[in-house]
Image 1 (cartoon, helix red, strand yellow):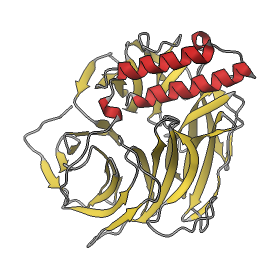
Image 2 (cartoon, rainbow, N blue to C red):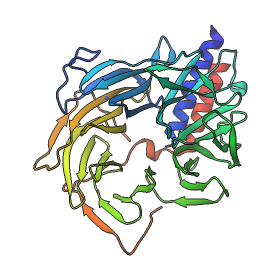
Image 3 (cartoon, rainbow, N blue to C red):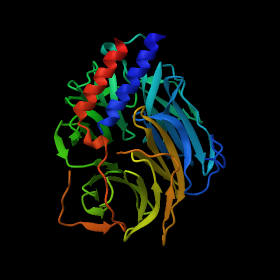
Image 4 (cartoon, one colour):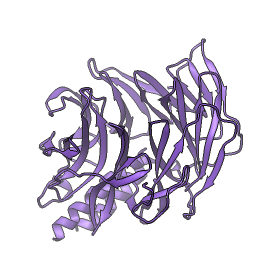
Length: 409
């Protein structure tokens, strides 16, 4: 039992490291009534670094998340049919613990769930194993659990629906000095492998290109086929379809030629919708939604939130399903996952301001072109620097290493 607890604690700490370096039915599980744009709590039992994923599939919205149950990290899920909520099916997990779920719609139309699992066994930090595992949904039932890796430590992963991109270490090192970037088939066969030290996470990928983050917090676009590395100045960066987007210094750029000036925000990402984009933007204490209809940028809704948040979103049937993790307790890393369902009108003449009731805490390559279109947000206020963004990554790694030492010894 003691070794089991050690493995779970180590799994949580590793998840914290990986993320540090970078919310229902007519009535939900907590008995809260749903109304449009109201904020519903999905779980109060998550932790910073545990991860969650949301996507629309076959007319339903799926959200899978990691929470702590009896000191064990487990994955749970919910399904939304419009505003009606139901429990989501779960794969037949067979690990000591699992976390960081990732939902992926494959190019063949299937829905796959990826996650990291610590298999049964006795572990210390030196021999800890984190496998990349997967299951495919069939008639609302998850199929057999597939081990996409059989040894080592799966640190971070992403999929474009055709291939899986994995950051992997044969033996765990808290300094990330032997990281490998791999391209896998959906069955786990290695297509390409690149030894690139210092990668702490993969944030997006598409068609043979992967966007990774290094231990010094820099981002790079890597061509998997030839190994070329192009460093990019960005606060957040990713692919939307085949287009690259990035946010840097208050400006969101899409496909190199469309820019949105969002000076009061620290991060933003777009979602394609209605021949335009829905833009999710946030800073400590504020989460905002905008809609660009092709000619103008319109505000949709504002949420007053915790100072440290991690948002995810999907759109289905003209409704925005916006979920975010909010950090409630910095000392324990405890936080909640929230959900807000907001209709997306074609024309917007006013926007809403909504405030959460949870307590708050202190938070948190430029591609140039001579032929761009630029759009401005409406508000303009000051913004404070995030607490986590001000802590050097090497300090976090050293502190966590010391914690692990005392756990083991």
